[in-house]
Every structure is written in structure tokens, then in C-alpha cells.
Length: 71
Image (tube, rainbow, N blue to C red):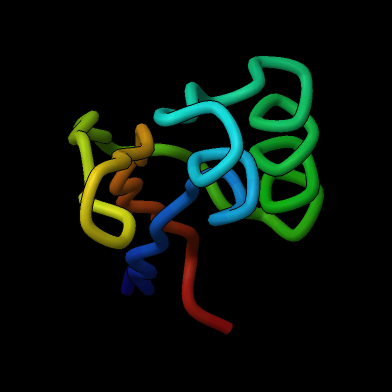
């Protein structure tokens, strides 16, 4: 039996407000994924989207679906 988890990874709101838009930092995103992998999760699929932040800014986000064997 499998267990699934949906997570949204995005940069902080502050960076999008200060810069007008925020891109995901690949080093932080890698660390984030590796932390989940160390708990037995593996990425099944992911999708990138631009999310609105306040009125005039946006930030990049990833919707990530993870799976692992249920305990």
C-alpha cells in the first residue's frame, strides 16, 4: 500500500515584494526535496506555476506529489 503527500514549495513573500517576482532557489529546493527523501518519500510528479503575491508581484511555486510505502 502506498501513502501520498501533496506539498507546495515556494519562496518567501518578502522576496517577491522586494523584487517584484521571486524564482525558486535551486539549492533550497534541492535541500527541501532531500529532506523528504530521507523520510522515505519520492517525487511522483510536480508542476510549476506562478502564484500571485499581493497586487503587483508574483512568485514561482512547485506543486509536488510524493509517495512512499505506508507503514
